[in-house]
Amino acid sequence: MWTRLFTIILMLIPSTVWGGNALIYHSNYSDAHTNMKAQLEADGHTVTLSTDGSIADNLINSYDIVVDLKYNNNIGGNGKTRYQNFVQAGGILIVTGENNANFSSRNNNIEALIENKFGGSLTISGNTSGCSSPCSANQITNSNNVTQTNTDAGVSSYTSVGHYPYGAYFTGDGTWVAKNASGQILWMKWSGNQLPSGYTGEVYVTFDLNQFESAFDGTDFYDLMSDLYTEAVTSVTISSGQTTLKNSAFNATSSENKVNLVTDGSNNTINIQQSGNNNFVVGTDWTSAGNITGNSNTLTIDQGNVLTSGSSVDNGLGIDITGNSNTVILSQGDAANDDGGHRTWLDIDGSSNHLTLQQKDSDTQGTDGDHFMSLDLDSSSNTLVLQQLNDNDKVMFLDINNNSNTIDISQEGTGNHYLDLTTAGSAHDIDIMQKDNGNHAARIDLGGYSIDFDLLQQGSTSQSYNVTSSCGAANGCTLSTTQGE
Image (cartoon, rainbow, N blue to C red; front, side):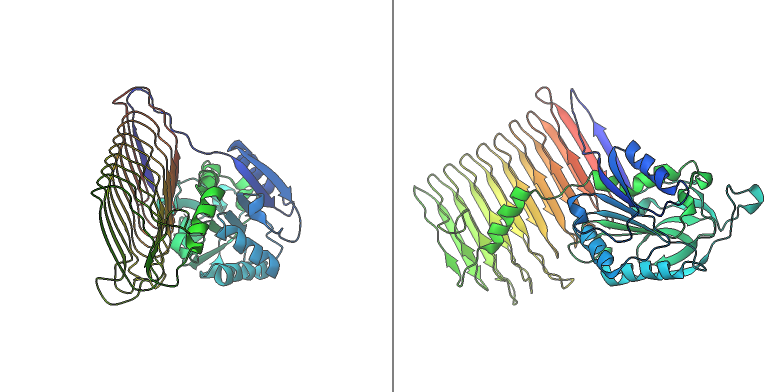
């Protein structure tokens, strides 16, 4: 469930990514595949139809969405692994079975896919009642009438989805998407922490091919289909350049607790305390020195597990600050049993910036979080409070450049969160929170003049947000967005 509120003063231009590539595996059954193709194309996708009996390798290199309508064909061992890799890399997978009386082998094959490749559970419970094409009034029952959809699964609330004649209903540990009028689950979704750690895609399962035929469609069916894959075309992922920067940071290590820091100038106040497992300060190239040049900078660095007993493994800092009255307070991994292998990369370059940076992993879920935070401020009177907490990976890239931005960003919970923010010029006031166990991601640009921007992404369903704005005059724009339950 999500809501989005835009308050617009003068000119605000939000933009989202739309379109992509989709693959439909099918068995030439009636018009099921052509109907799905038509809807994907109406939503801006380029669609490939295939009757191949085997699943292609490296699907993520070519497709955002894969729809498997081969109700009468088992997914082989290689195919399961290739679907697994596709979803792990962010793909949207929709898999269809059939009634359990005639197609139990295919259905069991899908159960094995969910349980062995995605760490979930799925159990076929029975079959809905039969229905001819199209269903006559006396054939429509609570069992085959799809009348309930779940907004917590990221779809809208629909009551006239269509008919599900003699298909299997089931239970599982995913999030139910659609039910019949008897309350039996007909569609289910696995995403976020319902998938193994690091998986950023989604899996949908249903067990009736006929529902895709035009003869059985309800007025809401194709709106529901669009909802299923909307996140694929609005998804935000780390860029290749950012991946290189992040990998370089985590490849940097030290065999000892060391500080390689050079200061040049007057009135710098530096307080560095490191404890526990190979913390280091080596500069933004990860090989030379931290630097800090000139004027009255105040820098406090606190790495390792210094507050309580436990371990903090391999926290590392760049730094590079140049000139003026910057105040930087930074703490990484200060929590019991944190296992905080965090990296922070700074640059800054002048003016009266005040930053409070903190990365911690309390290890409450037993899954280590290696958080990465990169900054590049350049100038002016920015005030930032940045915080990344809890298990699993949190990744943040900021740019900002100049003027009097006040930015408070926090990434919390057990989800893998990603944030990329670029602003330039003027007095921005930006609050961003990504939290809970969904894998949330946001890429934001904004730009000049005064934009008061709030973003909240939360809940167990992975949320994705991408906005670019252009504000036409000073004291310009307000944009507020909330996504998630």
